[in-house]
Length: 229
Image (cartoon, rainbow, N blue to C red; front, top):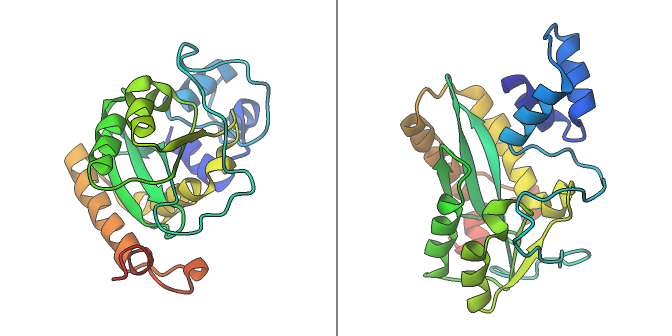
């Protein structure tokens, strides 16, 4: 899983076949069935257009993608969220974050040891008690298609947008965030427990928001753009 995570972060176009070949070249005896199972467990989906043959929960409504050709014009215009795999020394956790497209500011984040929807629902629910956006974008995972997640957004008048299947670049800003998190923190530190991961990632996101300048923001920090700080 560590090798799959690193290779996907370096080249997210690797699907099951290429990942299997990659691991075999490194001397690991694996078959495609195992690689597919691990990639699904890690929420990793290769970036290329492919047939929409399956959904995690076909009973839930999938909303259309609303952001093709759309540029965020101001703070709280577009938010998006996703889940990524975070490795520990022994084991792993799942990280979910919400980012503002205009400022790149990470509005909130949370960790979970399972892929149950509750940690996503609670995080976004807490945000909606303080503020809201115009469009909220997610992928088609069961955590985000459940009415428990989408209904509170719709009740606030927020438009719900969802990526096409296998099109992670539809949610480009959160994908860039994951690369930054992994290259600038996760791969540089050994985290043994969930508590260590939570403390370490808390420090990372504080630095990301308040001290990490972005060329696309005119060499300002996300906090300077979002908070005027």
